[in-house]
Length: 202
Image (tube, rainbow, N blue to C red; front, top):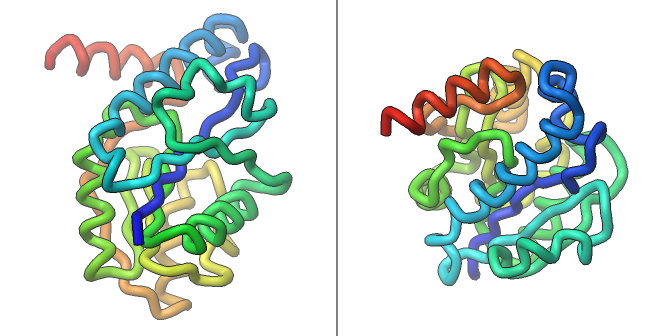
Protein backbone atom coordinates (compact mmCIF):
# COMPACT_ATOMS: atom_id res chain seq x y z
CA UNK A 1 0.00 0.00 0.00
CA UNK A 2 1.25 3.49 -0.84
CA UNK A 3 2.29 5.67 2.12
CA UNK A 4 0.34 8.89 2.69
CA UNK A 5 1.81 12.29 3.58
CA UNK A 6 -0.68 14.81 4.96
CA UNK A 7 0.52 18.40 4.58
CA UNK A 8 -1.43 20.57 7.02
CA UNK A 9 -1.93 24.07 5.68
CA UNK A 10 -4.24 27.03 6.07
CA UNK A 11 -5.46 29.50 3.48
CA UNK A 12 -3.14 32.54 3.77
CA UNK A 13 -5.75 35.11 4.77
CA UNK A 14 -4.44 38.14 6.72
CA UNK A 15 -5.37 37.93 10.37
CA UNK A 16 -6.07 34.18 10.20
CA UNK A 17 -2.56 32.76 9.88
CA UNK A 18 0.69 33.13 11.87
CA UNK A 19 -0.91 35.40 14.46
CA UNK A 20 2.23 35.70 16.59
CA UNK A 21 4.22 36.77 13.55
CA UNK A 22 1.40 39.13 12.54
CA UNK A 23 1.66 41.01 15.84
CA UNK A 24 5.27 41.83 15.00
CA UNK A 25 5.16 42.31 11.22
CA UNK A 26 1.46 43.06 10.45
CA UNK A 27 -1.25 40.59 9.37
CA UNK A 28 -0.65 41.33 5.69
CA UNK A 29 3.09 40.65 5.83
CA UNK A 30 2.58 37.51 7.91
CA UNK A 31 0.02 36.17 5.42
CA UNK A 32 2.30 36.88 2.46
CA UNK A 33 5.21 35.16 4.15
CA UNK A 34 3.00 32.19 5.01
CA UNK A 35 1.88 31.94 1.36
CA UNK A 36 5.55 31.69 0.39
CA UNK A 37 6.16 29.06 3.09
CA UNK A 38 3.38 26.86 1.76
CA UNK A 39 5.13 26.83 -1.61
CA UNK A 40 8.52 26.14 -0.03
CA UNK A 41 7.31 23.16 1.99
CA UNK A 42 5.35 21.67 -0.91
CA UNK A 43 8.34 22.04 -3.24
CA UNK A 44 10.66 20.52 -0.63
CA UNK A 45 8.63 17.31 -0.44
CA UNK A 46 8.19 16.82 -4.20
CA UNK A 47 10.85 14.08 -4.49
CA UNK A 48 8.67 11.67 -2.45
CA UNK A 49 5.79 11.87 -4.91
CA UNK A 50 5.32 8.70 -6.91
CA UNK A 51 6.27 6.53 -3.98
CA UNK A 52 4.05 8.51 -1.57
CA UNK A 53 0.63 10.14 -1.97
CA UNK A 54 0.99 13.82 -1.04
CA UNK A 55 -2.30 15.20 0.28
CA UNK A 56 -2.94 18.89 0.90
CA UNK A 57 -4.95 18.81 4.15
CA UNK A 58 -6.47 22.27 4.20
CA UNK A 59 -8.27 24.66 6.53
CA UNK A 60 -9.67 28.15 6.19
CA UNK A 61 -11.15 27.91 2.68
CA UNK A 62 -12.62 25.37 0.24
CA UNK A 63 -10.10 23.28 -1.67
CA UNK A 64 -10.57 25.24 -4.90
CA UNK A 65 -9.01 28.30 -3.21
CA UNK A 66 -5.71 26.40 -3.05
CA UNK A 67 -5.49 25.87 -6.82
CA UNK A 68 -2.19 27.78 -7.17
CA UNK A 69 -0.54 24.74 -5.56
CA UNK A 70 -2.42 22.09 -7.55
CA UNK A 71 0.73 20.85 -9.25
CA UNK A 72 2.38 20.05 -5.90
CA UNK A 73 -0.20 17.65 -4.44
CA UNK A 74 -1.89 14.45 -5.53
CA UNK A 75 -5.18 15.48 -3.98
CA UNK A 76 -6.78 17.98 -1.62
CA UNK A 77 -8.81 17.21 1.48
CA UNK A 78 -10.54 19.63 3.85
CA UNK A 79 -9.85 19.38 7.55
CA UNK A 80 -12.84 18.73 9.82
CA UNK A 81 -13.85 21.10 12.61
CA UNK A 82 -12.39 20.58 16.06
CA UNK A 83 -9.05 20.99 17.79
CA UNK A 84 -5.75 19.89 16.30
CA UNK A 85 -6.02 16.46 17.92
CA UNK A 86 -9.39 15.84 16.27
CA UNK A 87 -8.14 17.00 12.88
CA UNK A 88 -5.03 14.83 13.14
CA UNK A 89 -7.02 11.82 14.29
CA UNK A 90 -9.52 12.04 11.44
CA UNK A 91 -6.82 12.75 8.89
CA UNK A 92 -4.79 9.73 9.99
CA UNK A 93 -7.86 7.48 10.09
CA UNK A 94 -8.65 8.49 6.51
CA UNK A 95 -5.01 8.14 5.44
CA UNK A 96 -4.69 4.66 6.88
CA UNK A 97 -7.75 3.58 4.93
CA UNK A 98 -5.94 4.77 1.79
CA UNK A 99 -2.50 3.35 2.54
CA UNK A 100 0.15 2.95 5.16
CA UNK A 101 2.18 4.20 6.81
CA UNK A 102 0.85 7.77 7.28
CA UNK A 103 2.83 10.87 8.22
CA UNK A 104 1.83 14.49 8.70
CA UNK A 105 3.82 17.71 8.46
CA UNK A 106 2.93 21.35 8.81
CA UNK A 107 4.10 24.45 6.97
CA UNK A 108 6.06 26.09 9.81
CA UNK A 109 9.33 24.17 9.40
CA UNK A 110 11.06 25.27 6.21
CA UNK A 111 14.13 23.12 6.93
CA UNK A 112 12.02 20.03 6.28
CA UNK A 113 13.19 18.08 3.24
CA UNK A 114 11.98 15.07 1.29
CA UNK A 115 14.83 13.20 2.98
CA UNK A 116 13.21 13.75 6.37
CA UNK A 117 9.91 12.38 5.04
CA UNK A 118 11.60 9.36 3.47
CA UNK A 119 13.51 8.67 6.68
CA UNK A 120 10.33 8.87 8.74
CA UNK A 121 8.43 6.48 6.49
CA UNK A 122 11.34 4.04 6.49
CA UNK A 123 11.49 4.09 10.30
CA UNK A 124 7.82 3.13 10.41
CA UNK A 125 8.69 -0.30 9.05
CA UNK A 126 10.35 -1.00 12.42
CA UNK A 127 8.55 1.39 14.79
CA UNK A 128 4.90 2.13 15.56
CA UNK A 129 5.39 5.90 15.73
CA UNK A 130 7.92 8.46 14.55
CA UNK A 131 8.31 12.09 15.64
CA UNK A 132 10.38 14.91 14.18
CA UNK A 133 10.99 17.15 17.22
CA UNK A 134 11.26 20.94 17.12
CA UNK A 135 13.40 23.13 19.33
CA UNK A 136 10.34 24.57 21.11
CA UNK A 137 9.04 21.26 22.47
CA UNK A 138 6.68 20.41 19.64
CA UNK A 139 7.23 18.46 16.46
CA UNK A 140 7.38 19.12 12.72
CA UNK A 141 6.42 15.57 11.74
CA UNK A 142 4.41 12.74 13.22
CA UNK A 143 3.81 9.35 11.64
CA UNK A 144 2.16 6.06 12.52
CA UNK A 145 2.50 2.61 11.00
CA UNK A 146 -1.19 1.76 11.55
CA UNK A 147 -4.24 3.59 12.82
CA UNK A 148 -4.27 3.82 16.64
CA UNK A 149 -7.60 4.94 18.16
CA UNK A 150 -7.02 7.56 20.84
CA UNK A 151 -3.43 8.21 19.76
CA UNK A 152 -3.97 11.98 19.59
CA UNK A 153 -5.86 12.28 22.90
CA UNK A 154 -4.51 14.05 25.99
CA UNK A 155 -1.89 16.21 24.25
CA UNK A 156 -1.40 19.89 25.06
CA UNK A 157 -1.21 21.27 21.53
CA UNK A 158 0.92 24.22 20.43
CA UNK A 159 2.87 24.25 23.69
CA UNK A 160 6.29 23.35 25.01
CA UNK A 161 4.70 20.14 26.36
CA UNK A 162 3.38 18.79 23.06
CA UNK A 163 6.11 16.25 22.26
CA UNK A 164 6.53 15.15 25.88
CA UNK A 165 2.78 14.63 26.22
CA UNK A 166 2.66 12.60 23.05
CA UNK A 167 5.62 10.44 24.03
CA UNK A 168 3.80 9.79 27.29
CA UNK A 169 0.72 8.82 25.31
CA UNK A 170 2.83 6.32 23.37
CA UNK A 171 3.99 4.73 26.61
CA UNK A 172 0.40 4.44 27.87
CA UNK A 173 -0.66 2.79 24.60
CA UNK A 174 2.40 0.51 24.47
CA UNK A 175 3.67 2.01 21.22
CA UNK A 176 7.29 1.82 20.10
CA UNK A 177 8.23 5.42 19.20
CA UNK A 178 11.40 6.87 17.70
CA UNK A 179 12.62 10.41 17.12
CA UNK A 180 14.36 12.03 14.18
CA UNK A 181 16.72 15.00 14.04
CA UNK A 182 15.54 18.16 15.79
CA UNK A 183 14.63 21.11 13.55
CA UNK A 184 13.37 24.65 14.16
CA UNK A 185 9.95 25.91 13.15
CA UNK A 186 8.90 29.52 12.58
CA UNK A 187 6.48 31.27 14.91
CA UNK A 188 8.06 34.70 15.45
CA UNK A 189 10.01 37.33 13.53
CA UNK A 190 13.17 36.16 15.32
CA UNK A 191 12.51 32.61 14.08
CA UNK A 192 12.10 33.93 10.54
CA UNK A 193 15.35 35.91 10.71
CA UNK A 194 17.16 32.84 12.04
CA UNK A 195 15.86 30.74 9.14
CA UNK A 196 16.96 33.39 6.62
CA UNK A 197 20.43 33.41 8.19
CA UNK A 198 20.68 29.62 7.94
CA UNK A 199 19.53 29.73 4.32
CA UNK A 200 22.13 32.33 3.38
CA UNK A 201 24.91 30.38 5.09
CA UNK A 202 23.93 27.29 3.10
